[in-house]
Image (cartoon, rainbow, N blue to C red):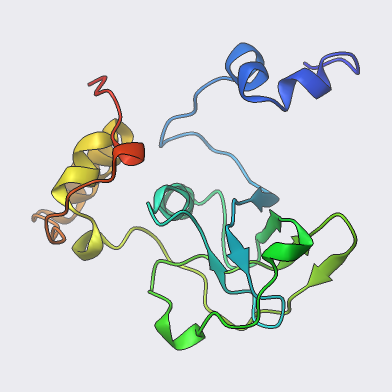
Length: 171
């Protein structure tokens, strides 16, 4: 539905709002590739650091639940060459951290051949009530799974959200 003249605009945050449409948890889609933000990434292992708020990991987990992605779905990040590091300790990564398969910089494309396991979904025992309270579709997903399995899912420890993670509640 995009023309060659609208593709560039559609790739911006304004364009996504203008041309895109929200999808629900029941949407039957297949995602071929995920582009994920990174503050730093290790080209030797595919380990990445985000901003530390976990929103990319939650989106990844929801896509896993929907069946839109699996372990073979490529995860790509785009960073400057100075954001390539060799000191992200893999053993310190958490179960929900998303590794990258491909790193694009202004000067090179790196295939990491990562052996770090990709998250299998949402890890509810790590998700704070505060963060859950910020994301309506995540609350819907939790409610849906609880109805399916007939019991309450665990909740992670409470946390004080950083100001950048606080959103206006819309429901």
